[in-house]
Amino acid sequence: MKTALVTTAAAIAASAVLGAAALGVAGGRRVIRPRPKKRPRVLAADSGQIRLERTVHTAAPGRYRIRFGDEDSQHVLVGDVVAQDDASVTRAVVEAERGVPRAGDAVLWTGYVYAAPDDLGAPHREVRIEAPSGTRPAFLFDTEQPSTRWAIHVHGIHSSRISALRSVPATLAAGMPSLVVSYRGDAEDETAPPATLGQEEARDVDAAIRYALDHGAEDVVLVGWSMGATVSTILAADVRTRRHLAALVLVGPALDWHASIRAGAVRSGIPAPLAPLFTLALTLPGLAQLAGLRRPLRAAHLRPSLTDVPLPVLILHSSGDTDAPMSISENLARSHPDRVRLEQVAPVPHGMERNVDPDRFDRVVTGFLTALP
Image (cartoon, rainbow, N blue to C red; front, side, top):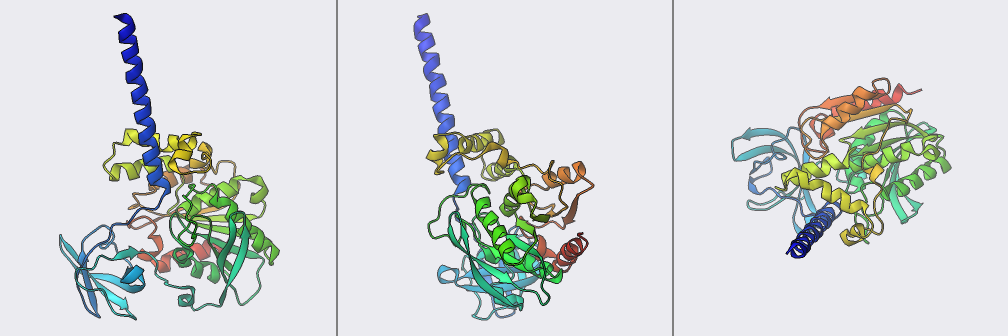
């Protein structure tokens, strides 16, 4: 009888372990693979206004770009909210070169104010960077006067360099040539490997730093958006790379993937205590491969530290960010008041810090950069 009970208990324990492992793998896969985004529906539209179903995104203040049509090839820039109720939001149309969506269309809501580098009205060209993952395209914006300090703009997870164009006006105003890079696994990578939460991506951005140094830069400022901030922090913590860095500018930074993954799990209806299984699966041999990674992630880089990084850091973060909680940025600024400055932005969703107030964003970033020694 006793032997049977022990055997049963062992079977139950084994089943629990296997179940936890399976849940961790499934959750980890959701983290590193792109998922379809929720699309608000258009309720009415004309050349002057668009009325959409109300969501936290469609109701956010600022300017945003709506994509629609075949493969989201058409887009409209919308501005201020002109009317709203509990179910809908009406916004002004700022720019619609190829028409507007129709009532009933499900549209892609983005923060990409600039649809292409030409929209910035600044001299630029496309260059190619030889990176560990292959040849990666980048936009290079030149300044009127030569400068030995460059800015490298690093976009976030499952997006493209177009999203990081928003921070280029501020670095150009500071007189810095600006390189807007791509990396493995982003929206431009046709091989579509899973994201590694900044770890493999950092190797490609390190190649971009070397490109800048080979083309006239003496030092570099990294401007990291969301996961791009993870990349920037990982590189700043590496003493071999740090000597080439002048400062970091981090926008809506993902500085604690444990917190971000937990927040995402809760939004999906998954109990928060189960979220650690997702990050654990991504760091364990065998389980990481089952989730889709070539090798396990380094646990330390899921929460990269700036404690031993003697660089000036500017963080712009919104209190409305539910993807990368601002409390992480607040703790960092409190811990290092001598070199970490936090600029709190009005409540908007993750990654929309410039959309809500571009003038303030540019003024703060340009002022920070021009004050650097």
